[in-house]
Length: 176
Image (cartoon, rainbow, N blue to C red; front, side, top):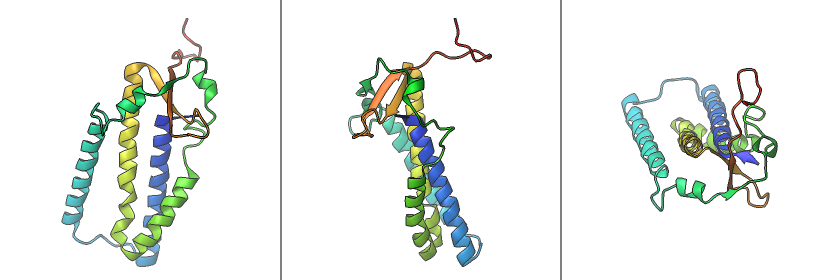
């Protein structure tokens, strides 16, 4: 099992690494130069960011076709599982998804060699996943639960929830 927030953040780190590799490759092959028409690029970037913010806010609502929150509420409850023992892959142990990195790099490098400005297209999905992680973290905090992926190995996309473990004190001991 894997926490949903950790999964989303792992995807963001992988896409950022793939974008860095793509930009470096394009810079080495075509030369490091300023992008043409910075005003137009800034307008495009602002439009994409505005769209992602609106999309993330829609996912945080309970609107039928957009809501991620409704999916969180439908998650299967895990009562007998200790969340600390249920997961083997923590974000700090594995902050990177090699499979996603390779897929994004194989997609982005040839496209960016053809047209250098397309090297930043993967950032769209990174910002979207970052927003989805924020929505999931907010829902977890509000409900005192943790969202998990992969409770059933054959259906890793299905969500489950468990109680949040009690917080620890500064010494690392559980509170009394």
